[in-house]
Amino acid sequence: MPKSKLRKKILKIREKKNLKNIKIDFNKVFELINNSNSKKKLVGGYYPVNNEVDDLHILKELKKKNYQISLPVIKKNFDMNFYNWSFNDPLKINQYGIPEPVSKDLMYPEIILVPLVAFDNNLNRLGYGGGYYDRLINKLNKKKKILKIGLALSVQKINDVPVTKYDKKLDYIVTDKYIL
Image (cartoon, rainbow, N blue to C red; front, side):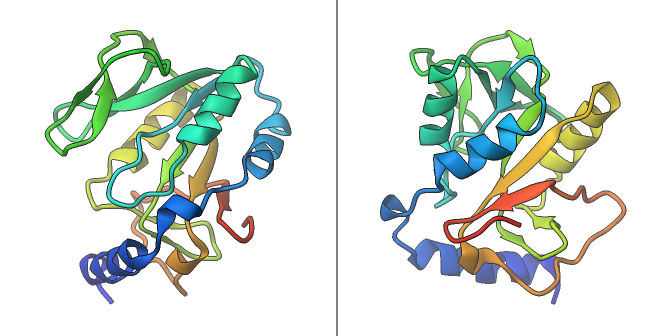
């Protein structure tokens, strides 16, 4: 099945779930982060939209543990960077309706929490189709080793995500029911 059809199918499934009552267990995510030997405690998260798994509670807990958090800002030419952000900082809405930091304090996180549309057992991720995270992961990997944690509902799992040479695998996928 083409990526576009898979995307529509899984987004409809995700839309029907009541995400307000589903939270990813912070302790599972923190255990992965803690075991990563991250020295600088730099984490890139995302502001959840379109029924994505809400990572804001995870970011709040990490902030309490003195992690520096950041959110992505979409640039021209399908480029994206992370900028320092705190829960008291203002956000602006980008062209896709996604809140982004106003901060111009560029950050290169060691750990990124990644939203996704679908995933498979091989830690492949299907996103929205823009390739923003794939390019970002490629760019960050050239600077340093990063830990990539996808956040999803277990119902977003499919047998095989169609992949190209540009698609980047995740290190872990944490769902409401299990960790891959």
